[in-house]
Length: 158
Image (cartoon, rainbow, N blue to C red; front, side, top):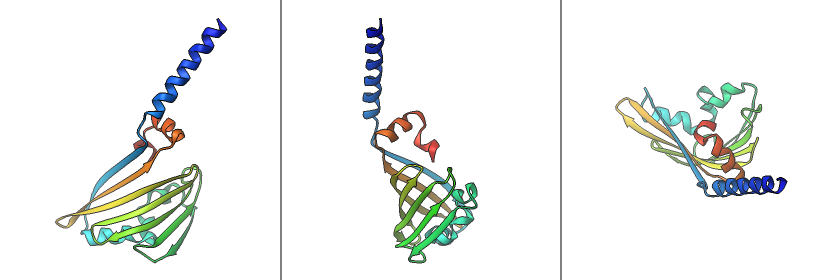
């Protein structure tokens, strides 16, 4: 009886490992919002990390988080680091590409509560005096991240 239970358990574990291993190794999450402002104005808010606290959801989750800025004051080469509570964690963003008023690309390094590196991208599409802003994030999933992603979708995690 014990042997059958152990064999059944081993089969379940093997099937689970195979299912997780076959999951995609890359994720992509995107969200779009339309803002009542021209593209250059919206672009300037995203292109300068010093201005992010006005709209950054992390700042609202932990108003006491420690923030530092390095490199260029805005645009390519600007660096933003943060250390906060359990919800916010710790990380670093480096603005790697800035093409006014169309595109901003950021290398995003999460350090805590888990280590991960992703690429975030903001695109700006003028719609008269309004701007459609699409934020997307792309990254790789290791085995543990695939397990988490199996139960909690990346879209929900972000």
